[in-house]
Length: 293
Image 1 (cartoon, helix red, strand yellow):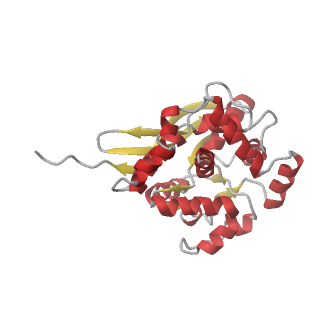
Image 2 (cartoon, rainbow, N blue to C red):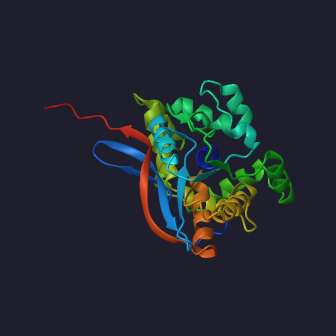
Image 3 (cartoon, helix red, strand yellow):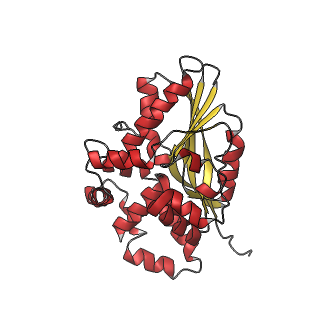
């Protein structure tokens, strides 16, 4: 059960470089008196050329307001480099959110898992909400054939990743309190609660808060096609875009799990300087108000 939950968490933030001990944080759980939230970072950098690069983390199922806010932000960039393994022509064709069959064909089994989770959690699927047809959207990922070839070369399969997920759980690197909320007894309590979807969403958000540690452990000693291999692709595309000095404002829009490796490459290899950050609420879970006395 826990392996499946870790795999679900990975699919929500997936769609590098080896990481330092202190990982940049792109996914966090936050709460106050009014709500609990899963928040995703936007970290801002300035290149030696004076061009700006914003790393915009993504979560692949979220509140529709999160994707609406991103669509508005994307208009301010000269180029938005985005992830999605597949044919770029298919990815940039407008798709109606209700056309689930076409969305599934674009993302395969992982997308199907994301969509099923989104439906249960009352969240929107990314492919149906982000406008990839805008002229400034730049595909910066592998084709399906390239991805499959790299996985074969590295001897990597979904079974490999599931095995690493099990090793992560056994390593003691994860917050045991967050895992206990989603163990067998925790799930029983959630399913018996008046709003089981909201309770499950809060517990899952706490697990996603540990995403950077989970993905670091799952990379393996030689890196993975899912993470480091695809990060190499986006960094090469970023170098190409930056070579055009007319491209002053650039965004990289990738799953939050990819971002620590991308940031490491950006700052260490390309000498970018961090200039700020902000956090967007991707999931907002309002808290029930106590009855008036």
